Image (cartoon, rainbow, N blue to C red; front, side):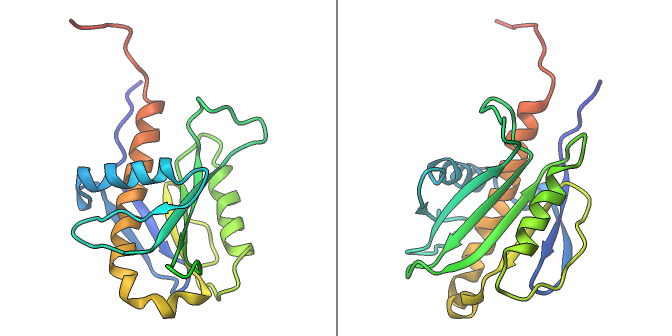
Length: 180
């Protein structure tokens, strides 16, 4: 069985309903690694948003959680994540949902329902796309944080690619042949 690397994902802005496609080549490797490091550091608590592609969002913080079954085991690659971005004042600014392709396609719709069902801001995109997808949910306070949006968009894109690539790589079959 041959496993191909992910080359694109569907990007949905839930506030505007805009749908686009992000290609793998759109993100620098080092930016992705900075975001993946922040993702790991932001698991138990909020961590500072990293500088990506020269953009900085001083004072902005992020944290993330995975979506999985109640019997989730750490060594299994998660199929969906939710990432929260807060402003320097602690106000939620953006929530990001990420869904990987899965054999039973159950995690994407669950994450979608969570994003749509728990918002206080209006949403325009109501239909869940096929996996893989990344959905950006603008929070009520987004208007007060307009200056940081280019930096947060760069982080969002780099983090999504790094997260999808990392866990897709964990799922790829490995050879038992070791080369010296």
